[in-house]
Image (cartoon, rainbow, N blue to C red):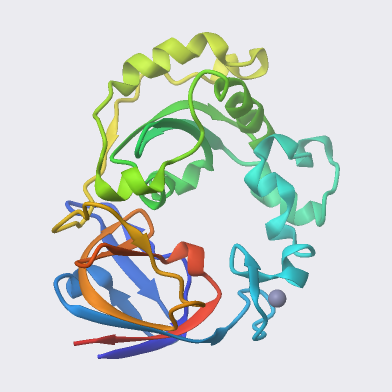
Length: 264
Ligand SMILES: [Zn+2]
């Protein structure tokens, strides 16, 4: 089987285990079906997810020009506390920013390698947790806009991490934590503006990733240095492929690269 197309973040479907899909222009692949098979990935060219041109990818699948211009790559994406649509204030495109920022957002705790706090649009639960490779997660507050979520995250970050150690996540060097206890402990640090949105009732969500065998250590595949790689696929966690020889490949981290995939 051969597939060809630009890499985008894999689509997912919650289940036991989680299902992963690579979606190309005219085709899609349920990656779970490829577990235990040999997979060859080859770099063909770049294809910016915005302009479609063959230019080096700068960040988030976009070339440098697009990254600094398009509304969907504004600073408030990575730093939600910089959101200003609730003040009617434009960053790059107010209409777009209102649509994305002025909707329910969740501040959550996720445990991928350690407990971390994060922000996502409500419609992205549990997708966001799956993408991070969290084996458990829980909501803390549900607020009406991105700004409130951002300032809550900033306040809570002083008391809990906000980064994932991706090596530990991939080697499954993880511990179960009682996230309800953590949420109750953090309640005291929620900013006043967001206090009324505290969620007291939800329980933990547990996520089951399709991994046959975790690697002992990991080495990351970089397609610009190694344009062709083949290996036996042993698992998928977060947005990573895990291969038998300890190689891991971050699909999301390679968005905007046009590849061919051969499955034997
Ligand atoms: Zn571009």
